[in-house]
Length: 268
Image (cartoon, rainbow, N blue to C red; front, side, top):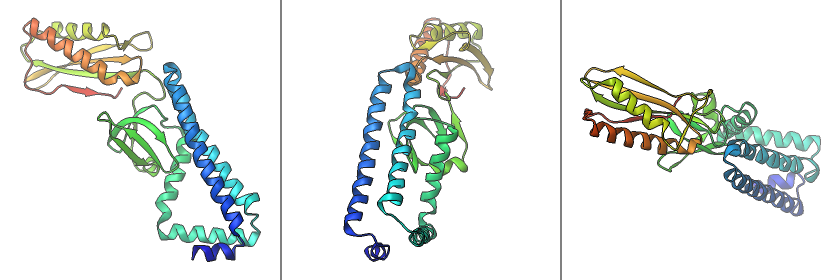
């Protein structure tokens, strides 16, 4: 049926071979450019996110050029043929490709408005991770457990998006530790503060301050330390470092911790 439609459009085998070759070349070019920019980004930590944001833009340009070449000079479509192709696309949308095209439109919006970019730490519709790829139809997140989650770009129109670093290499990390209600919270806070500012992962300046807060819960107190890491990839290493050294200091000074889990938050 597809071959008959192509014949009716006046597309011969030679033209079809050219179309396939062009699309394959565009796909390979997009992959090569993606790998090359990723390699360059990993060697430049301070410009890592800025370089990675070029990947989806470059791919859109490559794929868009391929489509232009296919629908323009290569096919040499007449007005009647363009109308026929438009009719086929309309029928395809009616038979289940609506979500596909919604994802592609979402991808275009992502490139133009940039609510997040490759390298950012985001939460999309309940899924948290680092944006490792922004494709035509979906965004790929790598979770803290190293799982790849593909989120349709159309989700951008229906779900909230939380961006922990907003394109910057630095990111705030929040570490929470619980102590018993009878604890000297001033001393506990000083221990957490010391653990944060002496961590090899911390980043502190006038624009990236740190703070320690205390919250009074029903049966215990929560010590919440908030500080930035210089490289967002050190988010969990920093949290683990601060937690481990704080707990060690608590134990040596007789500060008791209740049976409550330690919570790490990536939001700022």
